[in-house]
Image (cartoon, rainbow, N blue to C red):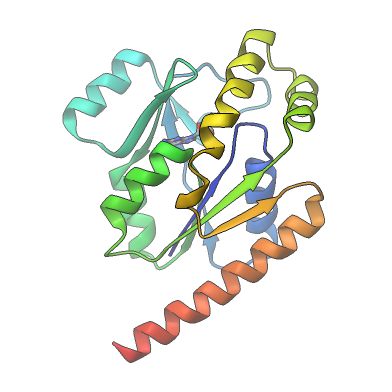
Length: 192
Ligand code: 5GP
């Protein structure tokens, strides 16, 4: 099962993902590839594999990605190999992907893999505060705030939309969603 967490950068996806990994069994995540520069506190191979634009374009040509997208001036993509290995292991994969990537994955994997899509909503002012606190540069903050409207216009793609205004409540809601969806998946598998 693949659980996709979307919502603008700064909506809290990464913090929530880490918390789910701590609290739930059989949950895994996998790093994406990106051509953006590493932020302070980030490590190679944890949330991302950091590669150059040229290396990324080479991987696109080789068909290494299930999906990729160019946003905020950088490439982001999901490795075909990493993703299919994790799915074969029977893990619940929680992945932080923006709206275009979600749309592509739903088209590509929709019939083979159970995909649960969750959109985390956050108010513009709150988002601005978080991005400033995170130490993002002003130009980067502008790019991310400008993307908010576009991302929210795609909300219809999602199974669940959650207002992420209280961390503990959001984590509890997502845990309940994952447990229920897992149960439905197991019942469907028994029936097949
Ligand atoms: P950030 O630069 O703040 O880490 O991430 C920017 C955006 O890229 C986020 O909205 C995040 O969800 C998205 N993103 C991260 N990994 C992937 C991926 O593999 N594919 C796509 N399409 N988007 C991704």
